[in-house]
Length: 270
Image (cartoon, rainbow, N blue to C red; front, side, top):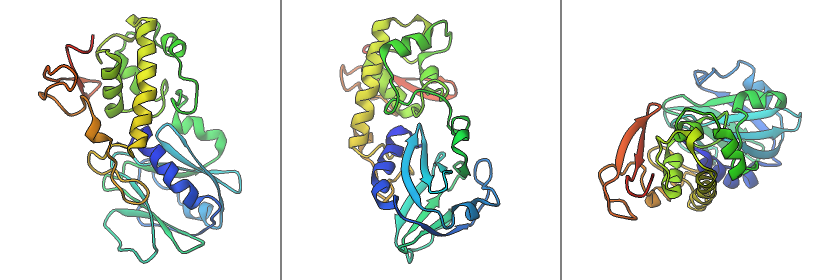
């Protein structure tokens, strides 16, 4: 699933290309996305000008000139691609948005787990969750320490909970906890202030590096112009079970936490 770095990469690429343009036409080829594409979706977008493009967690948010918000979530396998209107059509191209200059923005999603909606801005928190966004809000060691108090869940599960921290998923939580030296199964409520500080520092560093490298292309992810990310080449633990730790050489271990494979080094993480 595209996580915060992938959505931020798309935002930084598509923002200058979309903002200020008016939407000339919208075609929905398949309404069976997550939550369903509303019958009035195309009508709400058509004729509107994109005033700004932003992000909240894993959601891309386009502010429209009528004050409403076009909300986009890429689900597990979604791609949002901008190109010429005469480009070849592909299976699973579910939504076509034609701009006033003739270019077309295509939402492509083989699994159809993505979300497309036009919503009132007052509804955004209900849609995206109220978690702290590490790039937008003040994620500090003190804030994370307070968040973990009396929490019996694992630190990995807490960091992936979009009601607590917005935008992090399986790939980046594994990488963050490795760099922080904290095992993913550690009980959140038992973490010290120092450990929370290391996690926050690692969060900022991992996300910044991932964004510089265009995100992680494990399978389907591409940026808004079809380019693959490169951060997967720098993964320290994710999907490296049995391979030597890049820091100490000890084999990377794996364990399932909240239904997701978790990767860690038993020597480097405590």
